[in-house]
Length: 101
Image (cartoon, rainbow, N blue to C red; front, top):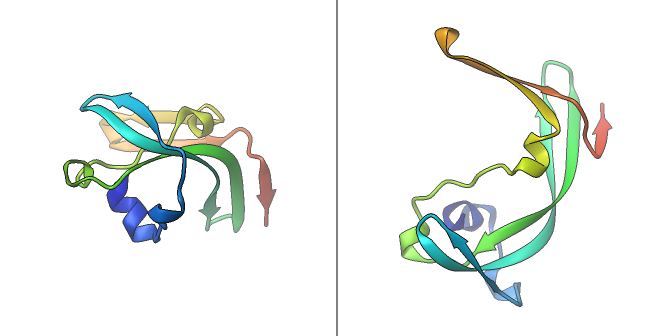
C-alpha cells in the first residue's frame, strides 16, 4: 500500500503500465512488479525467501491509511496455528523458494 511504498522508497515514477484493480474501496491504478520477500527467523538464524508478483497501488491520499497485506502466494506455503484462548498465532514454514542459514 502507498504508506509502506513511500517508507520503502519506491520510485513511483519508474513504474509503468498501470492496470485497474478492483478492491473493497473501489478501483485503483496499480502496477504489477516482481519482488523477493525475505523473512528472518532469529531463533534459528534462518532466512527464507519468496519470489512473488506484487501489486503496487498509485499513491493516493485516500489509500494512505490502508495496511499492506501478505498474499496467499506466501501464506499457502505456511501452516498457521491460531489459539485465541492464548492470544497466539504461530506459523510453521512448509516451503520457501530459498532457505539460507
